[in-house]
Amino acid sequence: MAWSIDHTKTRIDWLRVREKDRLLELAKKEVFWAQMRAQTAREQKTSVLRAAALRGITVLDIEPETVIPRPSVED
Image 1 (cartoon, rainbow, N blue to C red):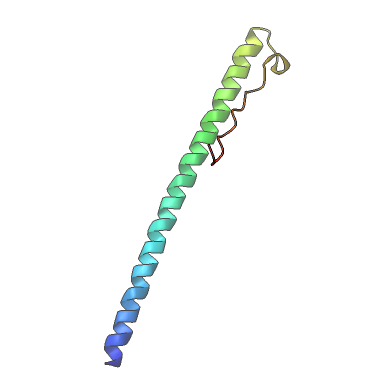
Image 2: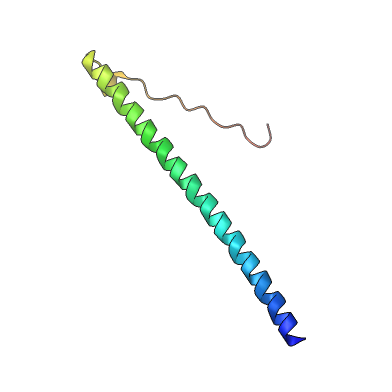
């Protein structure tokens, strides 16, 4: 009887470990893709600024990005 209880507990513990490993891998993938998006955004910004500089436009001539506020929960 004790072996059966111990075996069941061990099995449940391993199921939890596998689930946590799966969640960790998902989080790693999310971080990777977030880093790729950030890198792409930096490269695009550099490209735009380089193209603007070739046309005599400085960073100060470019209007800052317009930030659209997120709707509140009540809306």
